[in-house]
Amino acid sequence: MRAGSMDPDRYNVLFIAVDDLRTNLGCYGDPLAVTPHIDALAARGTVFRRAYCQQAVCNPSRASLLTGRRPDTIRVWDLKTHFRSTMPEVVTLPEHFKRHGYHTECIGKIFHDPRAMADRQSWSVDETLAFTNEVGGKYALEENLQSQVVKGEVAKARATECADVPDNAYIDGRVADEAVRRLSCLAQAGRPPFFLAVGFRRPHLPFSAPRRYWDMQDVTALSRIPNPHPPKDVPPIALHNWAELRGYTDIPDLGPLTPEQAAHLRHGYYAATSFVDSQIGRLLARLEVEGLADRTIIVLWSDHGWHLGEHDLWGKTTNFELDTNAPLIIAVPDPGRQDHRHLPCPCHGRTSDSLVELIDIYPTLVELCHLPSPAGLEGTSLVPLLENPEKEIKEAALSQFPRGKVMGYSLRTREWRYTEWRSRPDDTGTDTGTDTGNPVARELYDHRRDEAETVNLAADSRYAGVVADLAARLRDFFGVPTDFIHL
Image (spheres, one colour):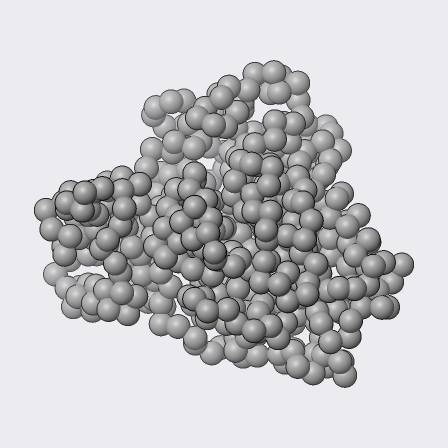
C-alpha cells in the first residue's frame, strides 16, 4: 500500500532515539563502526558533528530535549524526577504536534520513566513497549534471565550477551517489528500526518546483541583504548567510579578491569550499535516500500555519549566531550519537488561543524512543519544550518552535571571547553560551600590542540585571560542561576 492519500501540505516526522549512542559511527568518521544504515541516512541528510546534550544522563537529557527547556528550567537533574511534577503544564514536542492535528505515537523508549505510560498526554494512543526495565528485553540466554540481581531499581546480570538468536529475541528487535507494522498502517490510513517516535535501548548496558553483530566487529582494533588516563590536573569531582557498570554481576565492585574485560566491553558496545543500526535500516526501508520517504522528515538522535575506557571512565554522567557530544542527523525530503518548495534547500550528505544543542530539535521541527512556535522554548531552530551548514547560530553550547550539592556547568565553544563546579544552597537556602560566587573547581581544555581533553589548563597562569573571559560568558550569556534545590 502506498501513501498516495497523504496530505500534500503536511509532512510526517519519524523521530528516532538511540540510548547511550556516542558518535562512533561511520558517518562521523569512525573506521571501526559497522553502521551502514545510519550512514545511508546521513547521506540523505545533514550530520551535526558538534551537537551537545544538556545533561549526560537519560532522564534530564530526554526531558530537556522533549520540552525544549534546559534542566535548570524544568528542574530535572536526576533519574527519578518526572518533568510533569515540576512543570505540569509544559507542552512537549509530540504534544505540540498532537495539538496541531498530527497523529502522535510512541514505540519504545522516548521519555525516561519506569512506568508503562511515561507521558500519556503527549501521544494520540497508548505508548507501546515503553517500559524501560522490561526483564525479557535485555537478555535472551537463560543463564542471564535466571541470574538477574536487582541493583537499585534495575535488574542486572552480565554486562554483555552474545547469543545465537533472532533480532526480536531482544526488545529492540521487537520495537522495530512494531514500528514497521505501524508505518504500514499509517501509510494505509493516509491522514492525518503522523509524528512517529521510535526509541531503541541499545547500546545502553547491557551490551546484548545477536551473535551475527558481534561477528561483524574488528576485535583486535577495538581492544586498544585511546587516551585511557584521566586528564592531567583534573579535579576529582569531574570523574566518577563507574557505578552504572559496576552493578553488573561480572564487573568488579572496585578496582580496574582486566585488559580482556575492557576489550570485551568495547566489542559488545560496537556489536550493540550495529544491532540497532540494522533495526533503523528496517524502518528506513519500510518508508520506501510504503511511499512515505518523500513525505517524511527523519530525525535521529541520542540522549548523550558514553565513555569506553577513555579517561579511565566507563559510562556517561560527566561534562567531558565524549559524554556531552551526541549524534544528531536530520533528513528532510528533496525540496526540488514542486510540493516541497517550502523546505530548506538540498541538504543531502552535508556535515555541519556548527555548535548546536539537543534542545534545538524542538524549534527545528516546529519550523520545518510550519507549526506555530510555543512560548518558552530555549533552543534555536537549525533550519538555517540545513540551508547552509557553514553558518553559525550560537557561540557556545551548555551542558551540566550535578555531583551532590555541587553543579558542574560546561561551556563548549569552537576552541575551548570550560567547566565550573559551583556549590549549591541546601534545602534551607544556606550555602553549603565557601562561596556560591566562586567555583569549587574549574576545568579548561584547548580543543584547538587537545580534542581528547587530556590536560586541564584552568590553573595555568598563561590561560588566566581565557578562563576569565569564559567564566564571564558562562555567567552573563547563559545567566546561570544560584537558587537550586537540593537533589
